[in-house]
Length: 304
Picture 1: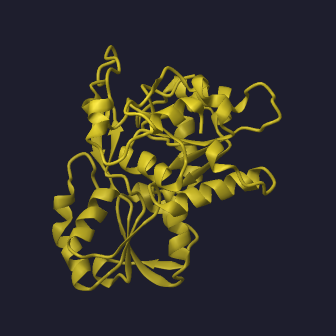
Picture 2 (picture 1 turned 90 degrees about the vertical axis):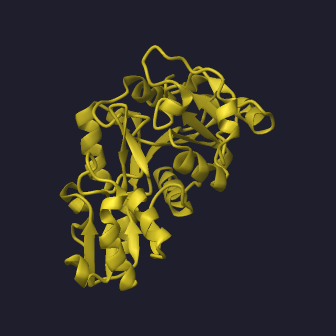
């Protein structure tokens, strides 16, 4: 853990970093969130991509530095890469991508031949490509895979109450392919699959979550980093998790023992008073003191 970030863990004040360069040399691997850090759902945050490129190309000091993008997107990594290309996120900013969609596919593959109901928009259907399953109507399903709301611009979890009650009556287990409750899209908060899964759990439904903040995603990302470097497992103390969500990015990293950095201009922007471009990040300790988990440090946006 960097000296700058270490001080945060032992004091009341959480440090606000001016840029990633303040701590970059302390780390060999960054596990970076995607939506809210690298882009806002429509376009890239150019400074974030540049910061990751500079991290990966720090002056040679005998250490190889990697960036793995860890996303709760409910689709395979290749689809996320295509989206990032379209938004203008440079491929030079990262080494690999691990998504909730990838983890969901592994969970589905454990039950070959099963009848699956897809609860979510058609754009997420690639999550099932090549798997030995049968996609069926809700009333015929052995398992439901939730990737999101059918229309996340108009619907809420309340619109799924009757559907969820039907699953619960038959004790149908759910895989939540995106544990996020909301994401930011053009400064608006958009509901995600996590809200539906939360509603299902509240009525007694069995839910398995694929992605942050749960331990398997960190195990998977660290294993991926080890594979990139010929099997050498990274020292967790030299790994930095970057994200904009306390509930997923920060809580998950903290539970695993990974140093972490909260990006303020994301889903917590309104709570932190940085919605407008001219807003500056002020005192955050009072807000953080009310939260169940605190980051090791805060940065307004991911920049170098």
